[in-house]
Image 1 (cartoon, rainbow, N blue to C red):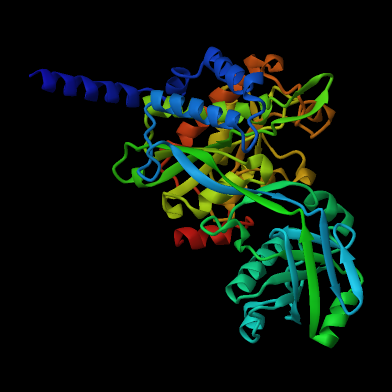
Image 2 (image 1 turned 180 degrees about the vertical axis):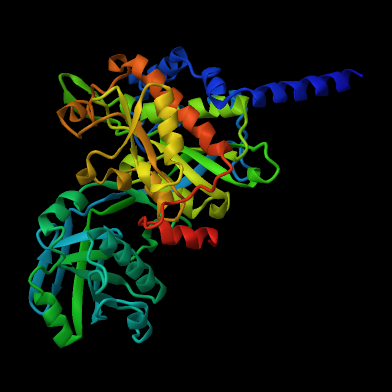
Length: 494
């Protein structure tokens, strides 16, 4: 009898909850006090800017997990402790890098940059394989040899594409038994001097060879060839004894973590679809002191985004939606979107089941009457987001600074590239101006100078939009003609 009464009360509670509007359910959990409490902890001096990697970032992850547990968010079977390991490595550039052949000599920074690998001394035959396509490799015997190739490909002109193709060539060279790979670099879109500033310093990257020893990656070098002199030499010579000497280069491997949890949906059919609610919880750590302050607290970027997702988790934990919810807090965004890139390549949930990603990321705000959504008009959820913002006195606007390429600079793009519709919900700004740069990646990005009246509206709008998106019977997808429309069709089989 007691059990029957309890079950009756449970279903009565559910029926009352569903009878309430999504607006009422949003108002039932979002509070300015809770927002402020979370932000003051995550952006405190004690967490030292949540750098990737750092002990303080782990503390932030533990705090997030504690909150998710308290909201009823469950771990996925693959990650029973809510932590998805992400393999990374810190690469330290060489103090010396010398390449020599045919009486020509090339040195680090001025002529050459180490993309991958560590200290080594080689004197081996080098062979030229044009662009280093799979066909080029398959036609040649490169075992024990240094491979020389042209950078990029005939179809790919963007620097990002050159990096991607270069990684493919490096993997192929390793598979074929080569001892080193040298790419001839001559991309005018990213001049050599800018490349040096970016690459000739310690950097954190994903460890694509996480199961292999540190020394297994053969040297991968970019050689400046802006005038195509070296390409002309190698096309004529094809083979040549070559020396490579690298000193001082180090690769330090480590593991950091995405935080992942889920809540099952209430609809018998729609619960097989997941809405991803995401944000990055890392920042840039401790850096150059400004007015005596060297801790880059990252309240706006991205403690606000982290707490936005926590607010959605609390709400959906209490009032589940028709679709299932997947909450992801990413590591390593500030190092190049590393946590989200890792997640989409190692997702514990089939990507086909992830029907929407509602990311939250921020640099700052200069207009408290709006919420800025990168990709607002690019998906079929546009009207839900506009309605949610309007309900709380905000205007939803699309990216006002396309020159900043902000859609492609946050974790949403990792999902978009796979075909998952994925905008980013950001605090309101009309221009990426001095009022944004005043706090963006600065030590004064702290919780005590945030407008909490505005944040209450902003958080409420996000949570309400989450509910509208998760409960709609409409298909969630890209607008036809969008850059990611076709890859989305391929992912979902439309």
